[in-house]
Image (cartoon, rainbow, N blue to C red):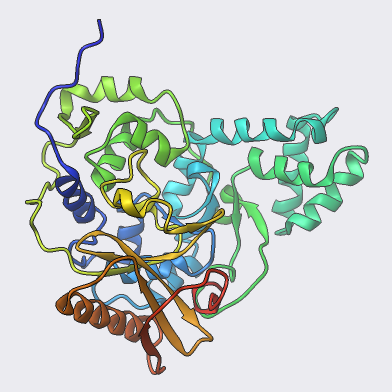
Amino acid sequence: MTKKPSGPVLGPRALNRATLDRQLLLRRSARSAQEAVAHLVGLQAQNVKPPYYALAARLHDFVPARLAQPMADREVVRIVTLRSTLHTHTADDALTLRPLVQAARDRELTQFRAGLAGVDLDRLALLARELVEAEPRTMAELRTALSAEWPHADPRSLAVAARCRLPLVQVTPRGVWGHSGQVALTTAEHWLGRPAEPTPAPDATVLRYLAAFGPASVKDMQAWAGLTRLRAAFERLRPRLLTFRDENGTELFDLPYAPRPDPETPAPPRFLPEFDNLLLSHADRTRVVPSAYRGRAWQGNQAFRTLLVDGFLAGVWQWEEDTALVIETFGRLSRAERADVTEEAERMLAVMHPGTSYDIRFGTVVHGQGQGRGHG
């Protein structure tokens, strides 16, 4: 007979405040950009600038140079890791998390079996490593070079196989605020000048996940990491952890001394970039996304930039023709909430775009328009 979860019940507001606190969104942190990236176990970075906006919402005295300089200095990098998506990680995490999630990258390759028929993947990885370590290569250049070896294989599948089998980082100036550059790749080991770590047990990462996203269930962490079969790690750690339940009876694990603020703790408005990990790192997202607004932050497979009010998803925002910040709220805001949202918008503009004048308007956000200031 399966033992039913025990422990105190944590409702959505209690989970919300705990998660916001650990995400540095309940109050801004004095940490450095690198310390914050490490604590958050990476920042989703499918586009170039979201990590900068993510830190602007979380850190005191943040300016883009606080992340741009470590990026230029190779102390943080852009690499595909969690959920097989591009993240900004510290150099240390790039060399440890990628081996941890390698099994997921190997599973991803099964989608390309037809295009890789007859291809020796070990040989492909060796050849691709030689290519990108000789000089950084674009995906198009990888397709061309690998197709010369396997002319009957699908060129795109060959390049994807290289990206899956190798820990490839995007070299700068790509990812550096104020600079531009096409995506060119080399291995993390070559870029950072040291070897990757052996594949670690997931236990230490479980503890880091709980520190940044807890309290959380096994399925929550599996959704965050893009991994399966993590139950055994949680069971090994159970003697060191506290357990709770959510309102549906799902068992939640947590660190004994992690913050769990009063559910009525005030939560100021925050402007988050598209694909912020706060909204992507739990199987049950109701701790941040009210049921009534489920799916409102997405259009197809693209994400809107989001607004939090009272700690929960309350709207979306965009740049309009690089002259205005347009905010669309899903429900009516009180006069005080509207004033607080406007004040936070003014702060974000002053931090991210100093010396530039923008209108702040409440209106309708149309996906695909006004994306210039959020990308790069």
